[in-house]
Length: 254
Length: 243
Image (cartoon, rainbow over all chains, first blue to last red; front, side, top):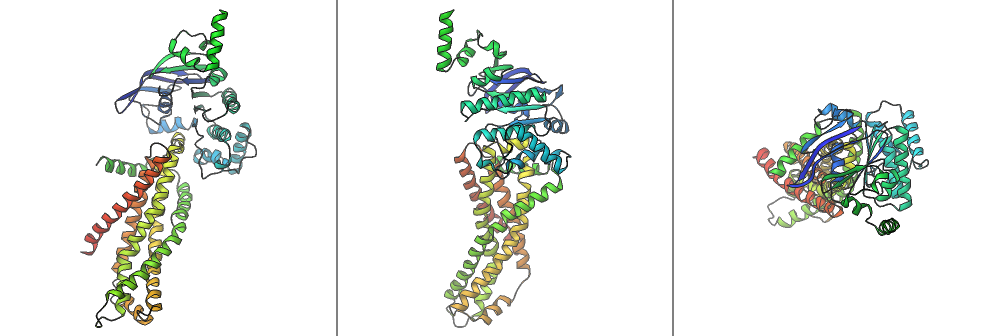
């Protein structure tokens, strides 16, 4: 479980997060949703330690990450895997080398064990024959899958995903979402996904936090989100034309 | 001043949370090939022609019949060792290697590759920058030595083929009144220039913000700042070591 308490952050005097608290549960796909510029990615980067908060605490299974010493932070980071928006694969390495990278850094596995582990991860994300391909030779969806394989290769406990569906077609988005949800259950890890894609919300949102102008405005599950009475969230959920027409027909039926 | 302070902190952070020695050796070899071997061609072309031009222009300026022909070789030698080989090659090095370092790190920054390293618990400055700086500091002096030889050879070819000096005179001029310290001075300069080019370019690239346009700007700034730093260091080293 990950807890974050009263997280505040501002850049050049502009307040981005105004005291956000909450928790992400183990074995669940936790979502941070909200419109662009509400501080979702900043919150995610603060939780993984890429940005230092102005105030607040982040606890990984009770261990205070934000106030921990260098050793504790390094120890916690070894349990973290992250998938970035564009995949963030290393351009100069093959798919296999990318996935093996975290193992080369810290695991004491033999070369054969490493290869076996990499192959298992690539198979798990449906990329059995892509080992020798370069990142420039694969599609956006494949890059995300390689990114997921790299994120989980070293037995992580926490998986962070930043906008998994950006730049992907709707069908590939569903494949990626399902993969994230399946891996979360299978490995019993704490997964945190930042998204503004309502398809992801309705597909994999076990636990959802809605951010609005730097504050947490709502928290619940995908089953509760359609019946919320928070106007800002309603506006976000039913923002597209299809959802609007669905809402209209629901309202008129009621 | 703020930028200078940030640059010093950036350099200091290379030595925190370092990876294993084996990791650095592998990265160092890769970077040495990228920085050194891949620059041989351009360095060879530039230095050969600079030597040739220096010989021709020296001969052009010698109008008195009292000045012996061997002076051409003598002047080409001193200009090559003291200034042309380390400094002009450094400008070429900044343009080729400096811009490459800045654009590589800038691209890694804007595509989250540096953040990916940090999340994995890797000190990205140490992992990405330290091998580039060390590789530059080792490979650049070797390039300068090559440049010095080729520049002298370029001068020899130009002087002898155009009849400005005989081969014997040119070689006598190269050997006449040779001061070994000039070679030491050349090597000191090349190590300092390599450090400046690699570290400034890495710094500019590492802190790139934005997109493709900003990567280009970082690359340009890296070359500009490196060239200014090279010329400033060139003057300071001349004052310190030759005066």
